[in-house]
Image (cartoon, rainbow, N blue to C red; front, side, top):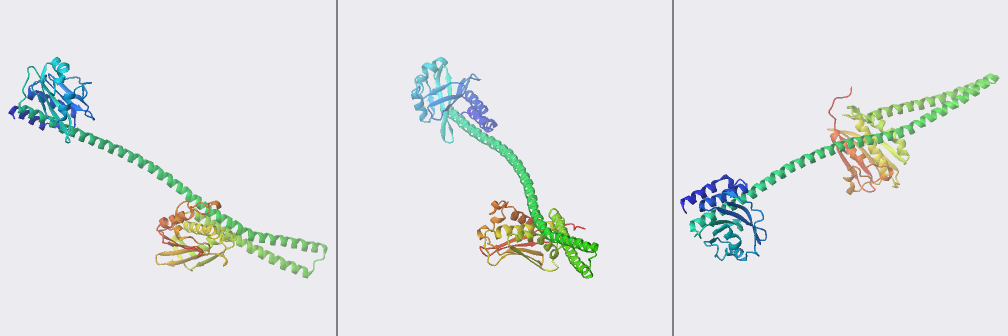
Length: 462
């Protein structure tokens, strides 16, 4: 190849414009280089449509100026001989374009008006496929294209194919950047949505936990009210009886009919009645104290050293009247001197939840020939204590053992069940008390919830 052509070709191949993805800039460089190397005034880039039935001008330079190439489209039906030559995917070197079999169809409409007498069309290939041509047009007399010129034009056409690849790569990279930016924004938006959702869920969870606390406290209120009514009723009856006896003895005194024997009977009756009223009132006062302590515990998460052999009965006993409504006996099996540093409020809530759960689910619609029984047990182990609540009710199938701890799962929604009691219990034991929950149950074999509770670290209540 001539040295001048090699120099131009080397300059173009080394140019950053070919590979930086700006196809318009690369196209200008290539066509200007074609015109310079071949010493022609007019050259252009023509590209196939997807069906290769048309070829459209993408860039046209004449005398160094870029022409408006809009609407310059050649169709296969109008120029069949030219398209047949293109189909060979070989260079068309028309030394005399007016008579050449491939280009004569342009003579009247294109070549003559523009004084073009020679054409050199070299294929542009991309990824092995011909996508168009670089069309080199010589004005003046017919011209014989020498082999170096043909190779030079073909090499520039290959460089255009390289520029197309660079453009595709740049477009792909831009799409990736845009997609990454979009994805990052979507991730930020989604993260913000999830954070809002988590905050809402946490708020809802706190409300539900509080609601369940109040439900457990409501059971205590119902139990304590029933329990207090009994000693108060006895005390009122005894006091009323003493008042009647007092009125009678005063009447006898006024009428002078009071005898020593009558006075002694009055004294014995009043002593017995007042003693009964006093013991009943003390019982009611003790129940009120238990209720005040337990209800306060259920709304407090304070930590203290707790004697469970004393505390568990004070929580469970007020619930006996609630259980008696369903003919359920409550048995306590608490080992003496069982202590642990923990939150009384959580212990109270766990026990009321488990007893309410056993009452609602263990015996509802279940006939037990042995009598309904719930047993609360507690004993110490090396790293904490075990609290168990067992019933001899209908039991739970193995397939539901995990499901019962899921939030909102309940088989007693028609009885007012929320499906939150055991879920809250599970979370309290695992998260607050660093403990474990074990469920042992089978149909017709009763149910046992065994809670392993470890000491809670924290500042002890003074």
